[in-house]
Length: 160
Image (cartoon, rainbow, N blue to C red; front, side, top):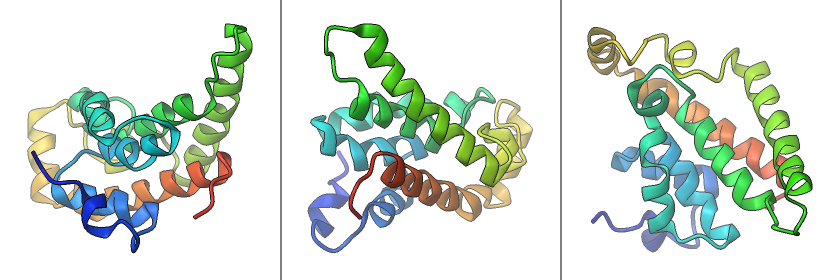
């Protein structure tokens, strides 16, 4: 098992740096976001990494939602679903923040879909190979991770 980045830099890294360090270790964008934020809302880092494992690369290379966005939506659920007994109201709190996150991310980057952000459809083997050869993940994914962190901090009113 890969040792937690947090164990190395507990007091020196902000959440964006922590998420990026995880990405540089090889974790998917969804895992990076979830493992960075989930402990703030009572979920263990190791569970968050497993929970988000299938959401990276456009939902498992199926031409879907960006992993940074997917991870952020998981975190929003952790943060805002309070189990008050009124399930509709609990979900409404989550959906309100989800809508704000998605709208702001899309406004800034033009899409929330991995293909639209990377410029490659990862569900097509030749495009996945081309994206890797072009170093596209290292080139653009850290920018989307940083934006997801910024928006989560803002929308969940978290101190840096």
